Length: 158
Image (cartoon, rainbow, N blue to C red; front, side):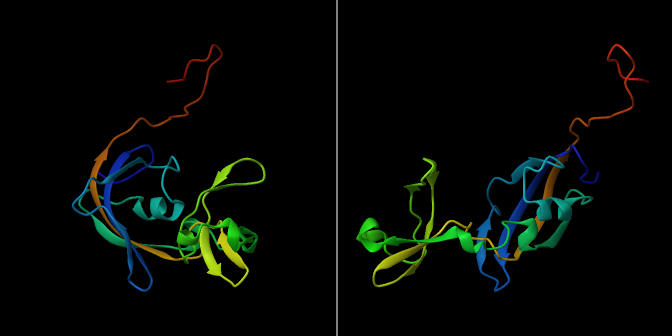
């Protein structure tokens, strides 16, 4: 049985950066379960899992465009240092604030300057190539949408 569209797939993974730093792992924990072909996981990861068998392992390289995208310069903005609590004035610190349109956003502290703090709204993994060490744990056949034609009256042709 191979991973194909509509299947419910359980996969164990470890995410690494190109410098080998481990970002996240499900090894020894509950595997990730998703429906293949439904865009529930990163596009590049899903493409790499396509056709794998139960028990199969491989390293899937996912470029930024198929993961969290490139870094967008418009995602950076400056705020006065007095608007950020002193204990949060550390590079990498995740903050919570309200955007001008009223949405709650979660920027990261990107830089600390004498008068301002530079915040970054890009995903922390934007611009990074991700390496997924994966193992397919289980595949369950899901419902597939078979388009075989429609007769008048809305019934599928046989």
